Length: 326
Image 1: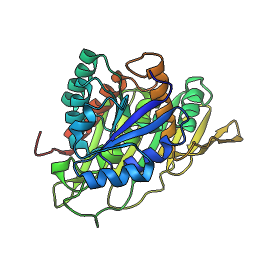
Image 2: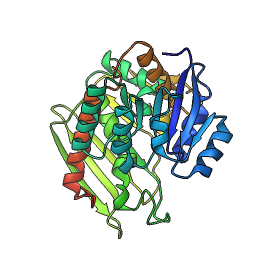
Image 3: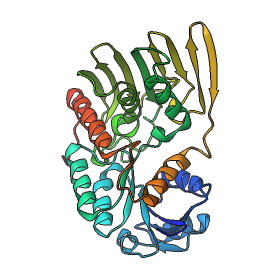
């Protein structure tokens, strides 16, 4: 691996801009190439972020010897296709979440990664957030005792968006669950593991896309109350409660800069700001794994991705959420 790890961006959309701004803050990483189906768009992105190469097709990036790892930033429906093609070309992959639309897709991707001996990680950036990592440590150390209740949501208003766009179009795997519902599900899984039973119900929009889903994850000695939606905004302040105390994660908890614990009538504030928006921390993890010759992260492993998509598949099944291409 070179001293500087060279990144390529496949799909220069909104999230790719945020990711690339953070990549510039990571000392041992550099954006060297960007690929779009529109060469002018690729050139504009490359010019904005000082990337040396701009490609007018995804295929050109896959065969380029100018990149070590590719960030797949397409809509959900492009993740499996382009990650697999890139891995078959020998490229390491950070794939935007969800890594695949369903369990079958994720298994195919992991199989190709293993066959080609390349690194693959789902870009679940919240897992690497300093506050989330600290909270996980406190819970595992028993600081708040036996966790019995967790609440997390993620919601914003988007019914005024283009119905043919990413969020409201079933043909693009639109809806709240894959886009933002993944976050509350992730937090419950991270803290409590896989539930024994799931109860889920969803509301669909006129396009057929799911726009509201409420979930209860039932555990032996705990419950998680989760919600995602596109019909209104929520506060997004998550709570984890145990037998000895509670943790309250600051608003927009999935990208939080801190949290508060309440233990034995004592309140303690933890301020753990991210570097940049927070994508820097998952980038650091990719770099660490590549430098150590690892093909997956211990913090967010292939099994973690399998478990997460399995939970989302069950939520979708109960909510009647299907996509035309499945």
